[in-house]
Amino acid sequence: MKTRVIHWFKFASPQNFYVLAGRMWPWFAGLAAVLTLVGLWISFFVAPVDAQQGQGYRIIFVHVPASQMSMFIYLVMAAWAGIGLAFNTRLSGMMASALAPTGALFAFLSLITGSLWGKPMWGTWWVWDARLTSELILLFLYLGFLALQSSIDDPRRADKACAVLALVGAVNVPIIYFSVIWWNTLHQGASVSMKGSSMASTMLAGMLTMVLAFWMYAIAIALLRVRNIILDRERHTDWVKHAVA
Amino acid sequence: MGGYAFYVWGSFGISALVVVAEIWQVRAQRRKLLRNLFNETGSDAESTQNSL
Image (cartoon, rainbow over all chains, first blue to last red; front, side):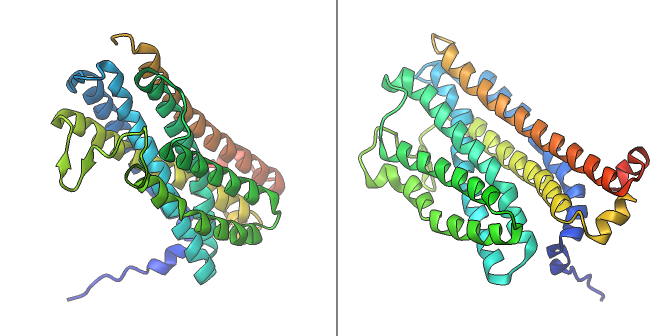
Protein backbone atom coordinates (compact mmCIF):
# COMPACT_ATOMS: atom_id res chain seq x y z
CA MET A 1 0.00 0.00 0.00
CA LYS A 2 1.26 3.38 -0.93
CA THR A 3 0.67 6.19 1.51
CA ARG A 4 0.74 9.80 0.49
CA VAL A 5 3.22 11.79 2.50
CA ILE A 6 2.36 15.38 3.23
CA HIS A 7 5.42 17.56 3.51
CA TRP A 8 4.27 19.99 6.17
CA PHE A 9 7.48 21.97 6.14
CA LYS A 10 6.83 22.77 2.51
CA PHE A 11 4.23 25.24 3.74
CA ALA A 12 6.72 26.94 6.04
CA SER A 13 8.02 28.67 2.93
CA PRO A 14 6.15 31.94 2.36
CA GLN A 15 5.87 31.23 -1.37
CA ASN A 16 4.04 27.93 -0.89
CA PHE A 17 1.95 29.25 1.95
CA TYR A 18 0.88 32.19 -0.19
CA VAL A 19 -0.67 29.77 -2.67
CA LEU A 20 -2.16 27.55 0.05
CA ALA A 21 -3.71 30.53 1.87
CA GLY A 22 -5.15 31.72 -1.42
CA ARG A 23 -6.91 28.40 -1.87
CA MET A 24 -8.12 28.17 1.74
CA TRP A 25 -9.53 31.59 2.54
CA PRO A 26 -12.68 31.38 0.35
CA TRP A 27 -13.80 28.26 2.22
CA PHE A 28 -13.44 29.90 5.62
CA ALA A 29 -15.07 33.10 4.36
CA GLY A 30 -18.02 31.11 2.97
CA LEU A 31 -18.44 29.20 6.22
CA ALA A 32 -18.25 32.46 8.16
CA ALA A 33 -21.01 33.99 6.04
CA VAL A 34 -23.33 30.99 6.37
CA LEU A 35 -22.72 30.58 10.11
CA THR A 36 -23.28 34.30 10.70
CA LEU A 37 -26.63 34.19 8.92
CA VAL A 38 -27.73 31.08 10.85
CA GLY A 39 -26.36 32.53 14.11
CA LEU A 40 -28.15 35.85 13.66
CA TRP A 41 -31.39 34.07 12.80
CA ILE A 42 -31.20 31.98 15.99
CA SER A 43 -30.13 35.03 18.02
CA PHE A 44 -33.10 37.16 17.02
CA PHE A 45 -35.90 34.81 16.00
CA VAL A 46 -35.40 31.49 17.78
CA ALA A 47 -33.82 32.29 21.17
CA PRO A 48 -36.47 33.32 23.70
CA VAL A 49 -36.62 36.55 25.67
CA ASP A 50 -34.59 36.35 28.89
CA ALA A 51 -36.54 36.23 32.16
CA GLN A 52 -34.36 38.86 33.86
CA GLN A 53 -32.81 40.92 31.09
CA GLY A 54 -35.60 40.91 28.52
CA GLN A 55 -34.36 41.60 24.99
CA GLY A 56 -31.20 43.26 26.30
CA TYR A 57 -29.41 39.96 26.84
CA ARG A 58 -29.16 39.46 23.05
CA ILE A 59 -25.90 41.41 23.19
CA ILE A 60 -24.43 38.13 24.44
CA PHE A 61 -24.49 36.76 20.87
CA VAL A 62 -21.82 39.19 19.79
CA HIS A 63 -20.12 40.00 23.11
CA VAL A 64 -19.12 36.45 24.06
CA PRO A 65 -17.72 35.46 20.63
CA ALA A 66 -15.76 38.73 20.36
CA SER A 67 -14.31 38.36 23.87
CA GLN A 68 -13.42 34.74 23.36
CA MET A 69 -11.70 35.38 20.05
CA SER A 70 -9.78 38.34 21.46
CA MET A 71 -8.20 36.01 24.02
CA PHE A 72 -7.77 33.00 21.75
CA ILE A 73 -6.19 34.98 18.91
CA TYR A 74 -3.67 36.35 21.39
CA LEU A 75 -2.64 32.83 22.40
CA VAL A 76 -2.33 31.73 18.76
CA MET A 77 -0.34 34.88 18.00
CA ALA A 78 1.98 34.22 20.96
CA ALA A 79 2.39 30.59 19.82
CA TRP A 80 3.42 31.68 16.31
CA ALA A 81 5.76 34.23 17.85
CA GLY A 82 7.32 31.53 20.03
CA ILE A 83 7.77 29.18 17.06
CA GLY A 84 9.40 32.04 15.16
CA LEU A 85 11.88 32.65 17.96
CA ALA A 86 12.64 28.95 18.41
CA PHE A 87 12.98 27.87 14.78
CA ASN A 88 13.75 31.19 13.12
CA THR A 89 11.08 30.57 10.48
CA ARG A 90 10.07 33.64 8.52
CA LEU A 91 6.45 32.69 8.09
CA SER A 92 5.82 32.54 11.87
CA GLY A 93 6.42 36.26 12.35
CA MET A 94 4.19 37.00 9.39
CA MET A 95 1.40 34.89 10.89
CA ALA A 96 1.72 36.69 14.23
CA SER A 97 1.58 40.07 12.47
CA ALA A 98 -1.44 38.98 10.44
CA LEU A 99 -3.37 38.02 13.59
CA ALA A 100 -2.61 41.09 15.70
CA PRO A 101 -4.97 43.62 14.03
CA THR A 102 -7.90 41.17 14.07
CA GLY A 103 -7.25 40.37 17.73
CA ALA A 104 -7.12 44.08 18.55
CA LEU A 105 -10.45 44.65 16.79
CA PHE A 106 -12.08 41.80 18.72
CA ALA A 107 -10.72 43.15 22.02
CA PHE A 108 -12.14 46.56 21.06
CA LEU A 109 -15.52 45.02 20.19
CA SER A 110 -15.52 43.06 23.44
CA LEU A 111 -15.07 46.26 25.43
CA ILE A 112 -17.59 48.30 23.40
CA THR A 113 -20.34 45.66 23.41
CA GLY A 114 -19.64 45.00 27.10
CA SER A 115 -20.03 48.69 27.78
CA LEU A 116 -23.31 48.77 25.84
CA TRP A 117 -24.48 45.84 27.92
CA GLY A 118 -23.23 47.24 31.22
CA LYS A 119 -25.08 50.53 30.92
CA PRO A 120 -28.64 49.12 30.96
CA MET A 121 -27.90 46.16 33.28
CA TRP A 122 -25.37 47.54 35.77
CA GLY A 123 -26.20 51.21 35.35
CA THR A 124 -22.68 52.12 34.24
CA TRP A 125 -20.63 52.08 31.01
CA TRP A 126 -17.47 51.13 32.81
CA VAL A 127 -16.12 49.92 36.16
CA TRP A 128 -12.53 49.12 37.10
CA ASP A 129 -13.49 45.53 37.64
CA ALA A 130 -10.85 42.78 37.27
CA ARG A 131 -12.45 41.27 34.13
CA LEU A 132 -12.91 44.61 32.38
CA THR A 133 -9.52 45.98 33.34
CA SER A 134 -7.60 42.87 32.25
CA GLU A 135 -9.45 42.90 28.90
CA LEU A 136 -8.47 46.55 28.47
CA ILE A 137 -4.85 45.54 29.12
CA LEU A 138 -5.25 42.92 26.37
CA LEU A 139 -6.26 45.66 23.94
CA PHE A 140 -3.21 47.69 24.99
CA LEU A 141 -0.97 44.64 24.46
CA TYR A 142 -2.29 44.27 20.91
CA LEU A 143 -1.81 47.98 20.26
CA GLY A 144 1.71 47.77 21.73
CA PHE A 145 2.48 44.84 19.42
CA LEU A 146 1.26 46.78 16.38
CA ALA A 147 3.11 49.95 17.39
CA LEU A 148 6.35 48.05 18.00
CA GLN A 149 6.01 46.26 14.66
CA SER A 150 5.64 49.50 12.74
CA SER A 151 8.39 51.29 14.65
CA ILE A 152 11.16 48.88 13.55
CA ASP A 153 12.08 49.10 9.87
CA ASP A 154 13.68 45.69 9.48
CA PRO A 155 10.75 43.24 9.53
CA ARG A 156 12.84 40.33 10.84
CA ARG A 157 14.06 42.37 13.81
CA ALA A 158 10.55 43.67 14.35
CA ASP A 159 9.28 40.08 14.42
CA LYS A 160 11.76 39.15 17.14
CA ALA A 161 11.00 42.16 19.34
CA CYS A 162 7.25 41.63 18.89
CA ALA A 163 7.60 37.92 19.64
CA VAL A 164 9.07 38.70 23.06
CA LEU A 165 6.26 41.18 23.76
CA ALA A 166 3.62 38.68 22.64
CA LEU A 167 5.05 35.89 24.81
CA VAL A 168 5.39 38.03 27.93
CA GLY A 169 1.89 39.45 27.43
CA ALA A 170 0.39 35.95 27.18
CA VAL A 171 0.34 35.85 30.99
CA ASN A 172 -2.58 38.27 30.84
CA VAL A 173 -4.88 35.80 29.05
CA PRO A 174 -5.36 33.37 31.98
CA ILE A 175 -5.76 36.41 34.23
CA ILE A 176 -8.71 37.56 32.09
CA TYR A 177 -10.17 34.09 31.94
CA PHE A 178 -10.00 33.36 35.68
CA SER A 179 -10.60 36.92 36.88
CA VAL A 180 -14.28 36.21 37.58
CA ILE A 181 -13.24 33.33 39.87
CA TRP A 182 -10.18 34.85 41.54
CA TRP A 183 -11.74 38.19 42.39
CA ASN A 184 -15.13 39.49 43.32
CA THR A 185 -16.20 41.04 40.07
CA LEU A 186 -19.28 42.86 38.90
CA HIS A 187 -18.89 40.85 35.72
CA GLN A 188 -20.74 37.54 35.97
CA GLY A 189 -19.02 34.16 35.87
CA ALA A 190 -19.14 31.76 32.93
CA SER A 191 -22.60 30.53 31.89
CA VAL A 192 -21.17 27.60 29.99
CA SER A 193 -18.70 25.08 31.43
CA MET A 194 -17.71 21.44 31.03
CA LYS A 195 -20.40 20.52 33.54
CA GLY A 196 -23.14 22.03 31.44
CA SER A 197 -24.83 25.29 30.73
CA SER A 198 -27.12 27.54 32.73
CA MET A 199 -28.75 28.89 29.56
CA ALA A 200 -31.75 27.82 27.52
CA SER A 201 -30.63 25.40 24.79
CA THR A 202 -31.60 27.70 21.91
CA MET A 203 -29.68 30.57 23.52
CA LEU A 204 -26.67 28.29 23.81
CA ALA A 205 -27.06 27.13 20.20
CA GLY A 206 -27.16 30.74 19.00
CA MET A 207 -24.09 31.65 21.00
CA LEU A 208 -22.06 28.66 19.85
CA THR A 209 -23.02 29.28 16.21
CA MET A 210 -21.85 32.87 16.50
CA VAL A 211 -18.63 31.73 18.18
CA LEU A 212 -17.98 29.36 15.24
CA ALA A 213 -18.81 32.14 12.77
CA PHE A 214 -16.26 34.44 14.43
CA TRP A 215 -13.68 31.64 14.29
CA MET A 216 -14.17 31.18 10.57
CA TYR A 217 -14.07 34.92 9.98
CA ALA A 218 -10.86 35.31 11.97
CA ILE A 219 -9.16 32.51 10.00
CA ALA A 220 -10.31 33.90 6.65
CA ILE A 221 -9.22 37.48 7.34
CA ALA A 222 -5.88 36.36 8.85
CA LEU A 223 -5.16 34.29 5.72
CA LEU A 224 -6.00 37.26 3.51
CA ARG A 225 -3.79 39.56 5.56
CA VAL A 226 -0.87 37.12 5.66
CA ARG A 227 -1.02 37.01 1.84
CA ASN A 228 -0.60 40.78 1.82
CA ILE A 229 2.30 40.58 4.26
CA ILE A 230 4.02 37.86 2.21
CA LEU A 231 3.56 39.87 -0.99
CA ASP A 232 4.99 42.96 0.68
CA ARG A 233 8.01 41.31 2.29
CA GLU A 234 8.82 39.08 -0.68
CA ARG A 235 8.34 41.73 -3.37
CA HIS A 236 12.01 41.66 -4.34
CA THR A 237 12.16 37.88 -4.71
CA ASP A 238 12.15 36.06 -8.02
CA TRP A 239 8.89 34.20 -7.51
CA VAL A 240 6.91 37.40 -6.98
CA LYS A 241 8.64 39.11 -9.92
CA HIS A 242 7.99 36.10 -12.14
CA ALA A 243 4.37 35.99 -11.10
CA VAL A 244 3.96 39.68 -11.92
CA ALA A 245 6.04 39.82 -15.09
CA MET B 1 -36.65 45.51 21.73
CA GLY B 2 -38.24 46.37 25.08
CA GLY B 3 -36.31 49.58 25.68
CA TYR B 4 -32.97 47.97 24.86
CA ALA B 5 -32.98 48.81 21.13
CA PHE B 6 -30.10 51.31 21.34
CA TYR B 7 -27.84 48.91 23.24
CA VAL B 8 -28.64 45.79 21.20
CA TRP B 9 -28.54 47.44 17.75
CA GLY B 10 -25.57 49.50 18.84
CA SER B 11 -23.64 46.33 19.69
CA PHE B 12 -24.53 44.49 16.52
CA GLY B 13 -24.13 47.61 14.40
CA ILE B 14 -20.64 48.46 15.58
CA SER B 15 -19.57 44.83 15.16
CA ALA B 16 -20.83 44.80 11.57
CA LEU B 17 -19.09 48.10 10.93
CA VAL B 18 -15.76 46.83 12.27
CA VAL B 19 -15.93 43.65 10.16
CA VAL B 20 -16.79 45.55 6.97
CA ALA B 21 -14.02 48.08 7.64
CA GLU B 22 -11.46 45.35 8.24
CA ILE B 23 -12.33 43.50 5.03
CA TRP B 24 -12.21 46.78 3.10
CA GLN B 25 -8.82 47.67 4.60
CA VAL B 26 -7.26 44.29 3.73
CA ARG B 27 -8.59 44.46 0.16
CA ALA B 28 -7.38 48.03 -0.30
CA GLN B 29 -3.96 47.04 0.98
CA ARG B 30 -3.78 44.20 -1.56
CA ARG B 31 -4.79 46.49 -4.43
CA LYS B 32 -2.08 48.95 -3.41
CA LEU B 33 0.58 46.23 -3.14
CA LEU B 34 -0.27 44.85 -6.58
CA ARG B 35 -0.30 48.32 -8.13
CA ASN B 36 3.18 49.04 -6.72
CA LEU B 37 4.45 45.69 -7.95
CA PHE B 38 3.19 46.32 -11.44
CA ASN B 39 4.70 49.78 -11.48
CA GLU B 40 8.07 48.42 -10.34
CA THR B 41 8.25 45.73 -12.96
CA GLY B 42 6.51 47.75 -15.65
CA SER B 43 4.25 44.87 -16.53
CA ASP B 44 0.67 44.96 -17.64
CA ALA B 45 -1.60 44.97 -14.63
CA GLU B 46 -4.69 43.69 -16.40
CA SER B 47 -3.26 40.52 -17.86
CA THR B 48 -1.37 39.35 -14.76
CA GLN B 49 -3.93 40.23 -12.12
CA ASN B 50 -4.92 36.59 -11.72
CA SER B 51 -1.43 35.15 -11.53
CA LEU B 52 -0.90 36.34 -7.97
